[in-house]
Length: 120
Image (cartoon, rainbow, N blue to C red; front, side, top):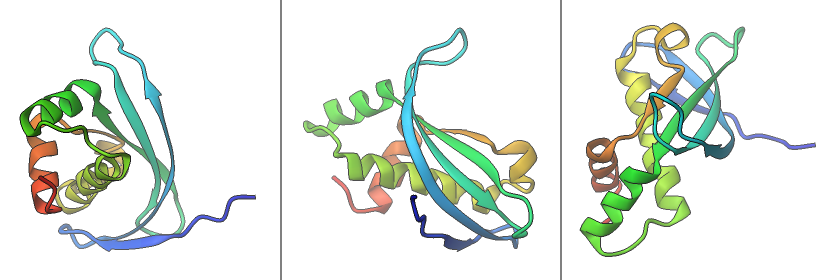
């Protein structure tokens, strides 16, 4: 049995979110989206309804960052960037359950997130 640690984040829209990391898996390329790593979080803003939020980190964005900085990203750095993208959604998306269930980390978001985390 896996015990998950529930974490709390107060978003910019006034909601207090509780979330935990469920896991990650490869997300193969589809017609309209590129291959990525999918990070899955369970989220609630009312302690009644829990819903999954997937944050996709495309391999292309990771490769672009690695080429620019001349080193690969560690798994922890990738997870940190993904978590920053989740926090961005908590701050900016008014109805996360309806409009924020699939989030993407593009090259620009990845660069900003890692800069905020002090990763170079």
